[in-house]
Length: 340
Image 1 (cartoon, helix red, strand yellow):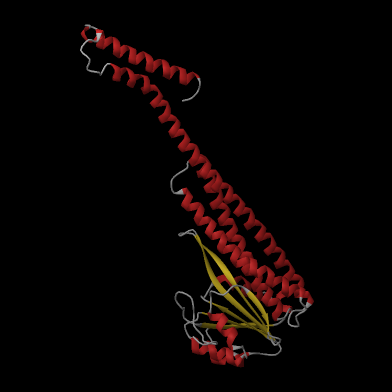
Image 2: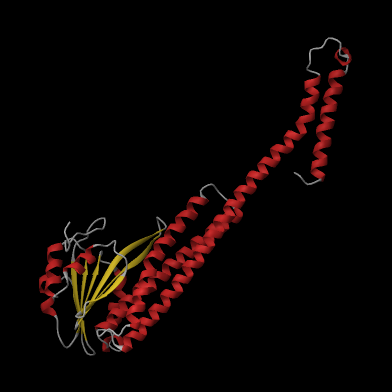
């Protein structure tokens, strides 16, 4: 398709919903399900304006909303391309941020990713999310409280609150991965099964997804912190630096998990090798016991006519006794040497 084409690249587009939040020190208003075509006209210059767009099914109205706010068509394309890596773009009049919100699926035991895009402009902030997620509900509840720092700050601080909410949710994912790692370690040491290798590889895949999501975001947040962007004041920059520190800690934790998984894979391979060696050792010892017995059976299985023992009345019972004596003696010797 040509550039600037709006195409949702996710699995299934959800119904579009647009909410408007406006507040200052004295007032707070929340208007759900407004018409996207009137979103721009709801802006008030004396208040903080947050337009929350969720669901990408109504492409035409979202495209019109972007045109009303003067969003570049290429950025609108990035909003709909949910396979995009996290990035930050300074367009002078507004700042565009796209990143992933991660949710742990308890049934499938895997990470589900949802793309969140923020567009910070003069006197407004627009958030775009794939689904009507409850992720930002704590932020709204916080803004409803009059005596909070957030009510006295501008849109850049609101963008920090949303970013901080997304990044804090990464720690929930880390807790789940930590539980998975502990469970796999316990199984590996105490109850190894044939499916444990698949579970370790699945956990490694989740860590790859997590690192691929967070590592680019760390660099982009670092750029916001160190570059003196006109839309981000020095006060908010300090809080963004705190998010940067959190991302560094998360990446270090992910690297620790990767080392633990590598160690578990080495231990799994060592256990498999030891189990194979143990089986081969047992088979070798059993074979060693039967070698002399096979030799004697082979000697007395020859069809020579003049073998003295063939006509002996007790020859069979004596030979069986010799077999048992040899086998028992070899077993006792091997047991004494702790080969079994």
